[in-house]
Length: 258
Ligand code: PEP
Image (tube, rainbow, N blue to C red; front, side, top):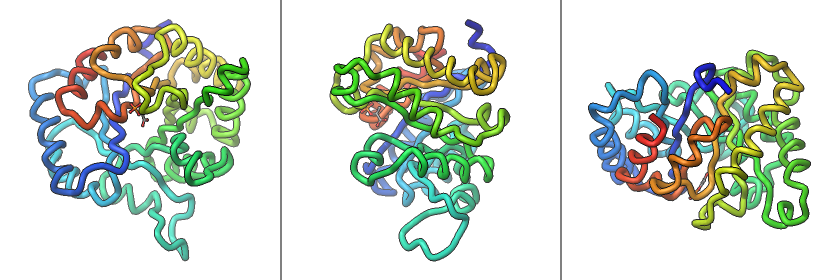
């Protein structure tokens, strides 16, 4: 497996944490801790922050290589959708990545695979990289249907995408039972499902496209387990929740990816 064909992406998902002033502090701490580390050639570092923190964090990170991500995007460009944020709005604020279909959004906000697909499409139209989250519940793993669940989510999320759009998309395999629980998937479990996702993409668009797609693992990744997870041939980075709220932990994960 040749990882040089795709980017490794370490993305922090701050979830609903940090006011703008707190976000500035954390962003500056991360930037300072990354100073002098040569991450540019092989690793992209992204912080996916709450909407209201985007401008503040973009300002704080000006001149660094750290990219700004959002945590959701509406699928229409504008209109009567009170409370929503569109892809053109995000793009103008300097957002380069957006998390789509996180399990918390599927669970608490009723997000379906069809909506995930629309959101990802809308992001791509503005040149924003969607980070599409897929992953099984614990009951689904226990029932032996992980492959079926992840295959369905991946295929529906990518429905109607051109090969070029798939290439510009990141898939994050996030077993729901590992998110925020402190119980990460083993390196073998993460590799097994990330490889499955790559096979699905190969089936849809061919091996060359599949090898160019970044597939992350997410779920209780931290400094202590990152190296082993990231060493897997099909794991091309991490989507990190809790540990991304500590500059020290987050930067240790970035170092594990270098
Ligand atoms: C996440 O929110 O995507 C996540 C993986 O969270 P945590 O790292 O806290 O499990």
